[in-house]
Length: 246
Image 1 (cartoon, one colour):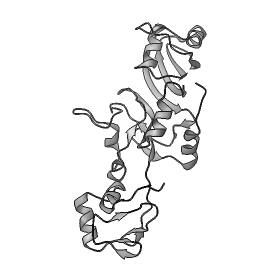
Image 2 (cartoon, helix red, strand yellow):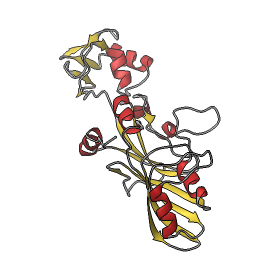
Image 3 (cartoon, helix red, strand yellow):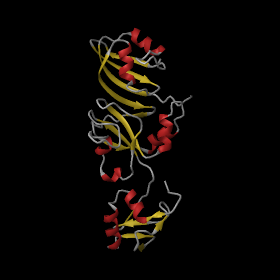
Image 4 (cartoon, one colour):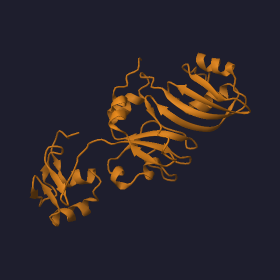
């Protein structure tokens, strides 16, 4: 996507993850950066990304404003961009992606794992997080205690949480019954610790929690915990087109 305003060349290159400002100034000084076929002599040269041809070491720079990453968040990592004491999800990314300043869209508990979208597209993030959109989120859950059809019916009606809030109807599917039941739960809102609190409301305890889908975006089964990949163009478009009824 082309930027609409001219920007400093060194800022554009830094945004694309090509190094620190100091490293980029060195690239420019060594005549390794060209703009429209001519060596760039000034880091402060104003360029129009996506329109001006920028080459680094003879290779054209494919400018983009936004990035979209699917992360399989591992346990023990915070869904945040920074924390004084704990590891955060952006720490799992290499500098070329961190240069875009991505942030997690929504949260997953520290002890949960699974699908987390990282992007710097604030408009898309707002669309996915807006309470009015009711974007579905699906989880694979291992539950301590027998999960029955009565629980599924309670979730369909909405359960009352510990603070008195009644949840929106959720869809509970029992995959494997037993004292440690395996279930799939789809909810349409995002209250604090909601999945754990919903099961607590019916006398059960969550042992393991993994998010497997957000709207049309499904966790890639090839991604191990801590691994990530860029979204495909089709996945991005499906998210942009997502407009469930309010």
